[in-house]
Image 1 (cartoon, rainbow, N blue to C red):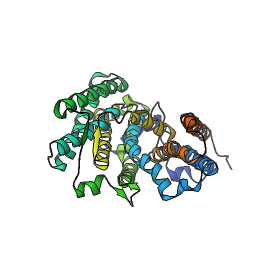
Image 2: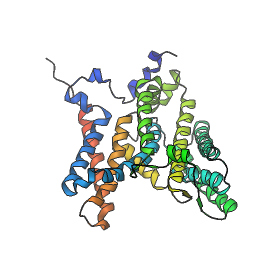
Image 3: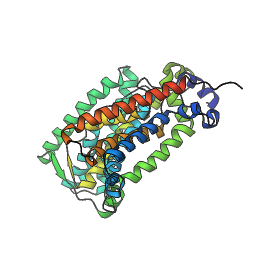
Image 4: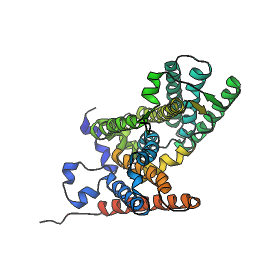
Length: 351
């Protein structure tokens, strides 16, 4: 299928205009999905610089929110792509501890080679992603309902097998030096190595989503799935692939955490569900699909991490931290939506 045919339904989705088409006008810049996310991030930085301290930007302070952003960001990217395509995956809340426990049980409890544990961890993510994707495509049941079911199913499976195989819900693991270097160590005793994975994946996602036909297909699915399918886009295969990507990414994060902290627990991971959705929405992705960008999700993830960790650099009472975080994130989303609405209604004056 040629690119011309694939791009026809994209007009129905609110896809970002090319930079050269938008030009250097204010409306062209604000029309970008990531514009509001960047302004929100800038506002959050200013807030914590005013009410916090400069330690917020020092290496130790920056590591506190960069480490959070990296772990969350790797999961947020595929969640954002699913939302752009009109779907959602909340089973990631169970896939993170599943990835941790899989590698810990195989390579920690049974002391099998670490690479076997890593392969099993990622392989389990692929299997769950296939189950989610196939169920959504074949049954036409909303993805929220399907992944809600797998969320509890995987959680129960991991808990039951952990107790059956090890007799406990927490398993220790000691990875060899190479695996530790690649997936679970602190650079300069401060920054988690997963930050570099996050940055590399950001570059890869930007290319795939914004410079390859696959990105156009994803936006087209979010704009009008039926028109996209009629245009020849393999909507079913692409949907399944996105669910596999989501589950595998979550399993990867869980595996890295187990190797980093030398242990795994069955209870970790549920907070990633809402945190990733918040990051994606703050990043400019519409809940209705068809609009968003990888750069916007990147900024949205950093915004959430900064708000989440920045409160500890201020003099505010920690008992009010959740309220402050909630209000600031809501303001960031509202500002994002406001700038997007202004941009979409903007039209340059004719000379």
